[in-house]
Image (cartoon, rainbow, N blue to C red; front, side, top):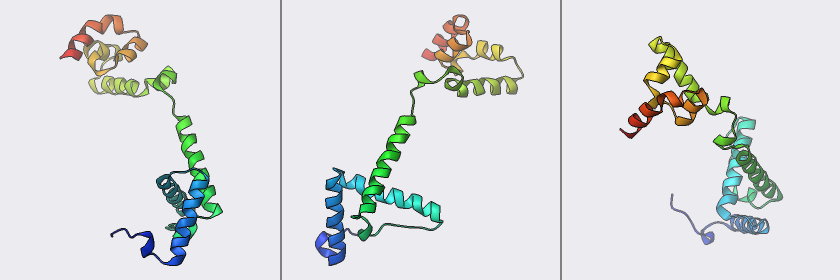
Amino acid sequence: MPSRGLDDVDASAREAFLGAASAAALLEADAREWVVAQFAMWRSASAYHKKFLLPSPQHMGTLAAQVRYLQHKANAQARRDRVITIDEQPAEKRFYVEERQLRGLARVQRRDPADVIADEPERFSREFLVHKGAWDAVKDVWQERARA
């Protein structure tokens, strides 16, 4: 569907889009971010009401639209704040995937996990091997196979 210009829409939609532009400018919001916020918040309302809802031009420039934008920004910031770097994670969470991989290999091969680490150290990261206390024993094999 080709995009239409502001002159191609009816007067009420034009007025609504101009209202949305002034509301976005009032909050110093990027126009694309404003529209994304409106659709995202209407999508979450759709899940709540169990029916498909979309904003219309008349919904984009209201006080409620400003609230939806601010809520969207707050939700996005909360998601960013929950992210922590790998170094900040406790060791039991940091190496969870590699620990499961080790247990799975030991179970499938019917061997002790220490034997799996000794025979296949390249499957694991250096940090995990240091954490398990096996780095000094397998570092030569790990470095040789990591280069290959």
